[in-house]
Image (cartoon, rainbow, N blue to C red; front, side):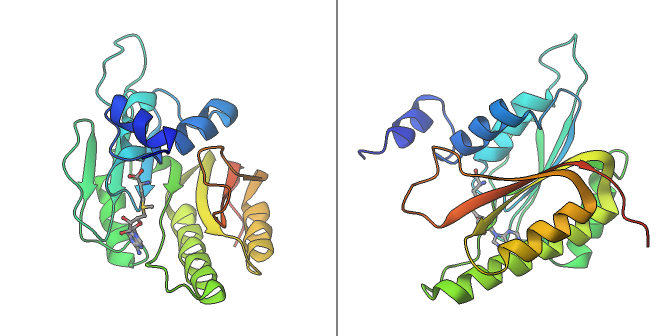
Amino acid sequence: MKDPYVKEAQAHNFRCRSAFKLLEIDSKHRILHPGSHVIDCGAAPGAWSQVAVEKVNSLGRNSSKPVGFVVGVDLLTISPLDGAVFLSNADITDSETQNKIISILPTGKADVILSDMAPNATGIRDLDHQRLADMCLSLLALSEKVLHPGGSFLCKLWDGSEIQLIRDQLRQRFQDVRTVKPKASRTDSAEIYLLAKLYRQIKS
Ligand SMILES: C[S@@+](CC[C@H](N)C(=O)[O-])C[C@H]1O[C@@H](n2cnc3c(N)ncnc32)[C@H](O)[C@@H]1O
């Protein structure tokens, strides 16, 4: 109850405090624009999608700006949100789910992939790190299928030995890769975010 972000989240009707992590990253690095098409991986309960809906203008509230699109996916059930399409009870690492997302996207392509996904933590630091790293790597395969050149990728990781490998993989695909730790991310948490901008398709 002492957490100021929890109070703020309630005041702004955000579904959880993590909204402020995305707001902070976006205000500094500008990844969500009116008209952007966004995939939100691990979207439940839906706070990042709430932020994305506003930033990309998916409800068309600002009639002078392009209208974007938000699709969210989670293993859990996500309560409906105006301006977003949700795939509940679906595993984003599963190729069937990925194909479904592609079929839902208006052009079959996206400008931004967001992932705040986390597996259920076992408490064994290395194991939890490895599981989240594997999930992140599976999103790189998704990015090759769906991202527009110039697109962005934001992914949560828990600090550990695989971070360098993932950073290297991102650097092969994106021009600008950086590690970010928003203030709203608890200082005692091992979580960090890798932000990759300016996607360039790798030649196969
Ligand atoms: C920290 S929460 C995300 C919070 C969300 N960004 C928000 O603002 O509301 C992490 C979510 O990742 C989901 N998740 C974990 N593994 C997943 C997977 N393989 N596919 C889809 N969602 C997954 C979990 O079910 C959980 O709801």
